[in-house]
Image (tube, rainbow, N blue to C red; front, side):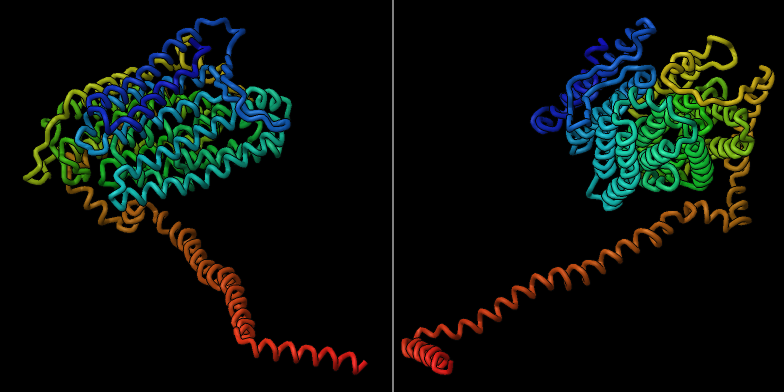
Length: 632
């Protein structure tokens, strides 16, 4: 099956073409089948390829499947080829598996949408590009998928383009990502200039011969990371992701939680051979990830829109993944990427179920006491919340705890302390969401009649809840041979050379207990403030109004960007338009036309059409010429 791995993106491509070209000519039921089934076929094929791969001899792994030579120009050669190794297979399973579940959910969530075919064609196209991104065997083909998912993100964020806020959010995401993509593209140029190839395996093989701290590799990795900050919403390019919640909730779950936003993490892990040679870049990745995790978690404390809470949670969790990459724990980063895909897709789809049952309401202040009205939604969201909070035995406990532990043993106690504080805030704001939505008194309007979602929506939620509950057991720490995820992924990752540090098992267990204890403290604090003493949040806010305003207004980052970047560029553009374009460029063109018109007007007066005038002109000419010769 591996030799035909190119079929994996072909299946959803067929769905995109069918729904895009014929969607308005066929029944809604047909679209409801074609959209999810084509992604389901990709998932089934990936499972088969995965099974075949794990039974292959070690000496034939990894495998490159070249479909055709794509671009050849002088010494430059780019193939349309796919790399099948443990890292790409993990990503393929996550993208196709979670993507299939979300497609099924979308059938119920979007059933009344008038542009139903357009939605599924865009969603299928996104899966095509995401699959290309994670399967590519070279940087340029990865960049094609990278740009493709960016395009689909723009289309799906602004899907309800009649709304000004949705249209603006789509444009904002597109523009902000272009900044990061420019850095990524420069990184690819420098890779080819340095190594003479853009093929992953060839580049990484040559990189092994370079010294640690090589300047060129450091520049390359920083440029690549700039691309990752845009796609994965890290400081300073994170502001687009919360606004992206203007898109339909399944879009938020698939693109802005489970798959596309993790592309930057995947890219950094894929380039672990380069980052292992660039300690400066590793430090930058860790610091940016840590700052993003802390800042976004603090913003999430004060948000009232249920989807925006989850959006800032996503940004924060992505920061944890980059922290792991920065301390050399690339496998832990991918592990958290996988478990995060389970529980964050679950939480977003669960919020969509709440919004569906509340007839479009997203403000948690207008909810409350919904657990009796939506018991399935409540149960699955509780599972997802326990997972993201890091409570044993849910999936997030294993992956987040490993990141915190790796940060500590790497010698960065400050990293561990700040990340642990971010984890505390995560547990608090996520249970704040649960308590404000499902507990307390009823705060919804009288015309709203909350109800449970249909099975086509709740069954995908249950599947994701199961994965969020047991998904972490593939990476059980401490016991030799039980960390299946680490053992499987290890051959695809270059391990950073660090001084060996050995800790007793009791120390590791103690750190696990500390990690979970911190989460429990956050949960208890949320319980006290939103269940036991619901008047307490207002009292706390009144005591620190400046701090509350700061985090409620998201540290005024958007306002700062508007004042320092957007408005100066806008005003500069207006100046260039009015002064340089209108007066200089247009003035030169229009002035030339005016001059020719004036000169033509003067010359035209000599052409009167009267014979006597022409005869007089001839006579004067003869007189002048005769006078000239007589004068000589």
